[in-house]
Length: 100
Image (cartoon, rainbow, N blue to C red; front, side, top):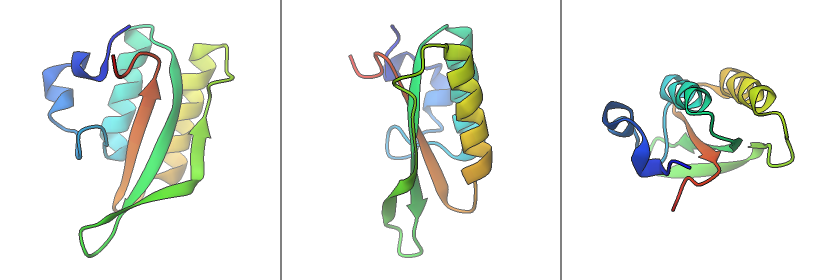
């Protein structure tokens, strides 16, 4: 199972606060997970505030730990990003083995 450090360097360099990505880059992470055949578990969302702080949003949150079909989970992840993208929105994809 690849960990976060196993992401391609160009994609890893796009992270903010180590594990957070804008919507476009979050979708690239999902593509990478699909290609690597890794189990996608869900996604957290944060909002950048005007003062530079971030606020973790508890609604929406995507928990797919129950999902047994990874293709469906990845599709739900893409839909989730597209429905929740916006100015200042950041996404943290979660997959099995992300932090070894």
